[in-house]
Length: 355
Ligand SMILES: Cc1cc2nc3c(=O)[nH]c(=O)nc-3n(C[C@H](O)[C@H](O)[C@H](O)COP(=O)(O)O)c2cc1C
Figure 1 (tube, rainbow, N blue to C red):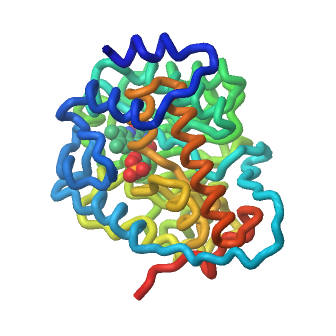
Figure 2: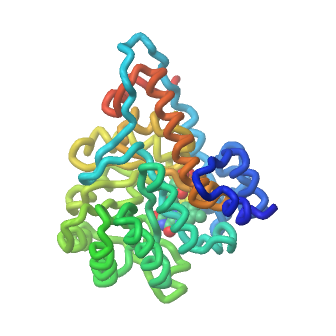
Figure 3: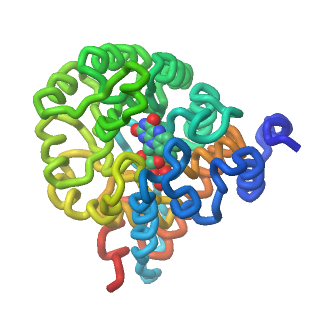
């Protein structure tokens, strides 16, 4: 039976089984994404466009492999208290410290059964129902930004739009539209500066100096999140530009081959800017244990990319919601077993890379 029919049957509060979501997604996605038991970048090496990492695919593979190297330190000799997984960001409280990363060009990268509009509807609604945020993307056509933004607006601004690094006039125009939609923050994937496909479609993207970024951050009262920072120097420049947050990210390994893993560069970046800017990280984080690892190594929150896309293809907004709850339950369990009652208790004594 086609997955679309299954979504229809599930409406009205019924739960959707995780394995069933994966099975549906596998059926729909075919060769595009194998929906591997561990989403680790091996089967899709080099598939850009597609779901893989650029070139050799090594940046995606390394993201995942290095997350797996970090181990949690078990300790249950603590008082028996409620576990609180919630986080407050930009004035709003969310149930968990992880969110759905922006994923664009769905028809080309994944499968035409969802486009950028229907996909983001599932992401924004499913995430909101789970008590978290979904990020949406941007593209060569205005509708790729404005359609998802409308969905966020319909969900009372619960979602974060991501703007590509166009020329500043275009960016500021898109910021004005985001402000009118009631969002609490705006992201910009500065690491998209090398995306040739956009230039070929007549919409070039650019690298940004600190001065150019300042013009953007000063143009709005909303917090700006710069996505695609991989060095301490980059984080310092983001701070100097007036950004409120960064995403330590290599775009899931899709913009540059042979980068370090995001979790490898995270601790030094956190050491430099923690407490002065919010730090998100993404790339290879799959489970609640992985979210815990990111927080232990200095992140405030995590973005999860490909697994939410699989959940949306295999289960619509219900699949997205269930996926968020699964990861949230895993995080709660990891906190219980490491003696953490709240996110602030998760530090580098709770998880580390073993020699
Ligand atoms: C198919 C695909 C499309 C993506 N499109 C965008 C995009 O439009 N904008 C953006 O900021 N990041 C985009 N990303 C990167 C993700 O937001 C995120 O950084 C990355 O997927 C995180 O790694 P993970 O998938 O291993 O969790 C895309 C990633 C994939 C796999």
